[in-house]
Amino acid sequence: MPGIIPLYETGPVTFSVSEAITGGMIVEAAPDGITVRVARAGSTACVGLALHDALPAGTSQAPTIPGVSASVNAAPLPSYVAVANFGVFNLQYATAAVFGATLQAAAGGLVANLVTPPPDPTMIVGMCYQSGGVAINGFGAVLLDF
Image 1 (cartoon, one colour):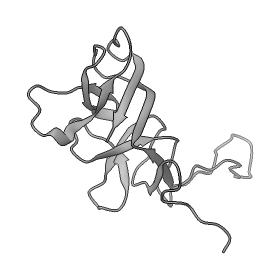
Image 2 (image 1 turned 90 degrees about the vertical axis):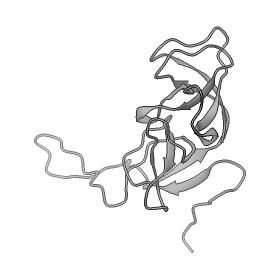
Image 3 (image 1 turned 45 degrees about the horizontal axis):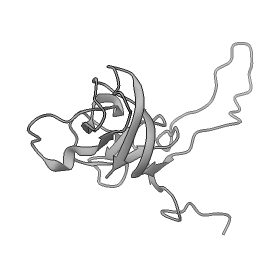
């Protein structure tokens, strides 16, 4: 056997992706029930945080360099992503949040304040862990807990 991708060892779980994902985005289970995708606003299917970039299988990654006929990509992105579901990470906020605020997924895989009252407790992805809070579109600590 040439190699194997662990589903779970001592760290994150790996999943195949159904769309382009950038590390640092909250991801959710895709409708196909097999892959993950960037979380939509208010998602109740979030599974964790993408730890690196990934592209769906079959996506062309051939670079286009003017005047160069060879198309070799020395660093192709994988078709799977490592997903963390617990820990403290520095993430981007779609809304301002105060220290200790409960968070949900926002559009584009960001985090935002949980809507009040929460329509579904499965929308909770974590807590604002940034002392002093975070401004709109700012970065700050998030205690993830899926």
